[in-house]
Figure 1 (tube, rainbow, N blue to C red):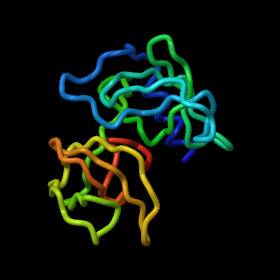
Figure 2: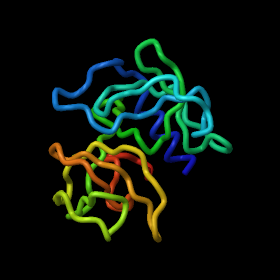
Figure 3: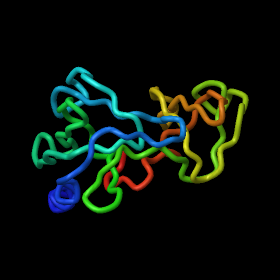
Figure 4: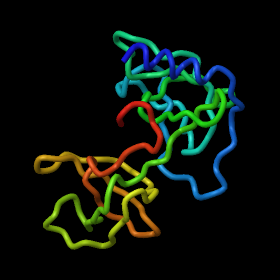
Length: 161
């Protein structure tokens, strides 16, 4: 893991901060003041935005990278970042791993409101615990509902969500 983090940090030494994809922004990344979900959110970076990785470390912050985005410096979960071209890193969009039902509520007992094909980009919201899995609120083509978290991944990310 440590060598993967070092390779990841090496890929991301020089990046232009800022530009988002022309498509609608989905699944932003929270920038926190410290390297864990317990720290407050200080900014939000849209998916597709270039960021500069300052470092990714081992030990207590092994799953977190310190980044710069515009004038903001803080920590993001390593699993939301993906390499993009020479020395660039972006906030990776969230995609489905396979054909996935989107339910009206967080469970299979709710009606299906939409079906997303494998590889579809979705806007992922918050997740809640459910029976044997977590359910995440998603927006796919204007349809809002819940999908099993294990059917979602950050496209191109070097580390799991």
